[in-house]
Length: 341
Picture (cartoon, one colour):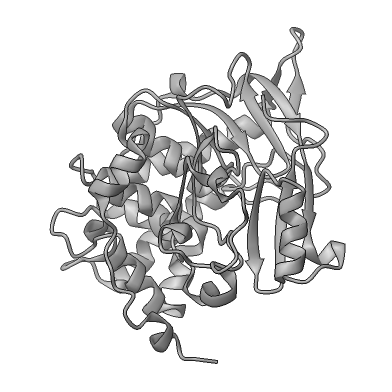
């Protein structure tokens, strides 16, 4: 197996932001509506985009179920999925999972990602040749780099905690330093105006001080914990795909239960407190929702291998979304029994 340095040789190219914004101008436009992954990265993305671009949060999608504000449609050109790539050409989305298996044999309908900003696809990274080089950060870090080309982004030192915590970023920084550095260079951290410098470069903020900030963040997060659940987890489905923490209302719509809302609002307030990105509740939807159930599958449960043959089987199923969760498994979602509205 080649060393990571060998794989990275010649790959220090930087993202061309003007070209990106020409291809996907909607990512920096105001007054869009977004559907978030219900985790720390998705919630950070919602806070960030609502502050700088006045985006509204109209729903949540976790790969098994989707909650969407009544009357909204994914066919609306103003709707964007954040922190989850959607394999439908009419849907705008942003994601960073590994989705392409073999760059030498892309699916015939790969243009289904034509409206998706997919970090690994931007570099033509695939699972067969580049799995060890896959994007190691969170969606929020990409959004910081992108919007940082348009705005002066506020990032106090207290924001380091949530921005290191999300998607286990603090774990990968020292575990995969070569790949992290390569991607930070790709995102433009050497640009003096990049807000990523405020996250990852500090002249007077020592590692010890970073650990102290993280410790304080974890303590506040733990105050939100429920039995068997961490305070940063926003659960809308059970492991078997059934709906969770959702209550039907008299008008036939649904709401996030009061107990779960209390926990989620508490965590969002913690993110807002540490980042200074204000939590404007009027921009967030927690009730008046319609619910949609999809089918979750995986290669290991099917007895499939991560091979061209079985990847082609997946593509024939017209998946809604999927991710290579390891070199040996792909998890995917199918539009059944419900379909995207």
